[in-house]
Length: 289
Image (cartoon, rainbow, N blue to C red; front, side, top):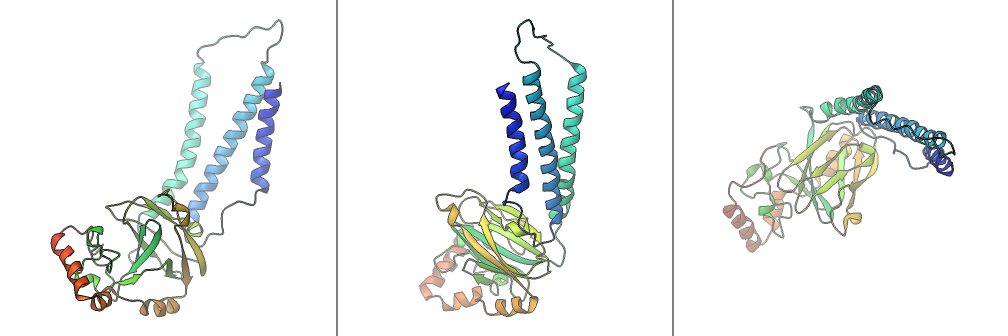
């Protein structure tokens, strides 16, 4: 009897906690409301299953508790019960998968007019790269990294000369414009996550991953690494500023280009960058994505 009471109390307490909890989803600031729908559907289905199964368990513990003069009936198989449980389990799984698959179908289809931004992760900071007037990001890879070429751009690729290099934790995006975010890691697994955008993706060493979204609310939002990446994981933070197109264009025009970095570098540094390009010819992980 005490066990049944404890199980029932846990169910009631869990429901009350979710109803009055101050920890909930942040206000959405992108076009991915469909991801919120998928999360809500999953929560309701799992929550309903949790309540029903645990209250049933509490009832069974109470109803079939040990009493003098009563003997348990052993039934090794019950085909009807198994079919019923299989059917409702399948319904629940389909219910959870359907909105997620619908959202994923949009998630991987980037609009043709989406702008491109690259986010590069390393232990434990973010840096960014924007295409220049040509709208193309130049080839890059960790094999090209030197002290003056922290993002590893290929100095022999002409598409990279006008790329804008942002060596700070702040990213800026234009309001109400689709953006394809290219993700690259310099060392270990990371994950680019802005809670208000809902969208996120892992950064995998050696390949370029991506997702896209359209910022719909102007403001300053926090960037987190959502993949445990070492002892400094908790410090791997940044911020993204969403602002009108005119303000974004003005800010971007003030940022330094890779070509300017090459011009300002010492002769020894330039020689080092081109030396890595000669050694690593043909090995950049992407060009003109």
